[in-house]
Image (tube, rainbow, N blue to C red; front, top):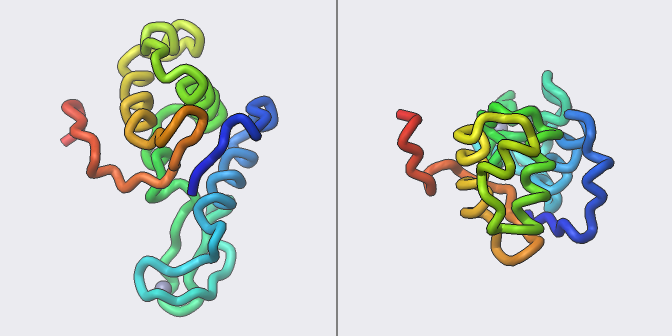
Length: 139
Ligand SMILES: [Zn+2]
């Protein structure tokens, strides 16, 4: 489930749909398995790029179980931040905030998640269950 950023043209991820498509492609690259019952057959879910189990009807969105779950930043912006952080893991959240015109805390939260997922320079594992980070502002 790793994205190699040197192979990506970040400009092509300027719509929510294109981002969702990439996430879904990565997430189910090795095929779909229902997290609820283990069934491998699915139909299209209600939201774009979501998948719905044909047996138990459990629906999984493209973003659930990824770092983009509950992300408050619009996906194209989050992708830009992901791109910037992958290319320069030392970039400050102040700099991200300035460039993206987003609150610094918002950038800090996403960057913290990203840093957990970056395996090496330019490569990121977008699958993220959410328990790894202690977020002082949530819960
Ligand atoms: Zn199922």
